[in-house]
Image (cartoon, rainbow, N blue to C red; front, top):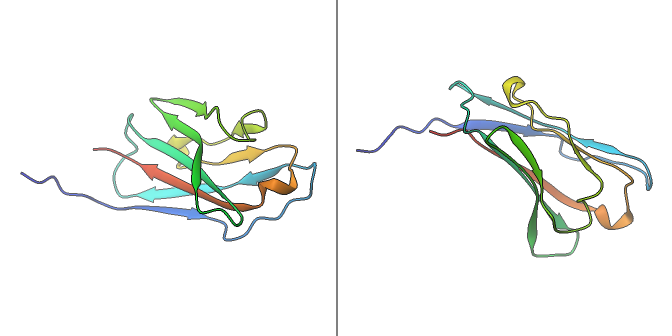
Length: 111
């Protein structure tokens, strides 16, 4: 049989501005009609300005935050979210000009 699927609505700011050397919070909140399961996962992706490729920079799964070991963010990222409060936000410290681009927050709440 096919299990029913209910959507998760994910909310982020359309544009976030920061100055070089400062820090910026990338806010991500979500809403689901279902309870937040233990298997919830949150992934942040980054697509540099002018690039076609998007890389995964952060992942939250099994109750643990994982900072992906690629890209220039690994030493500068902080998890500030709380899935129980429907929050998947991260902070990027020591902003660099190359941080300009598109950040995407993806939330999955199985089953």
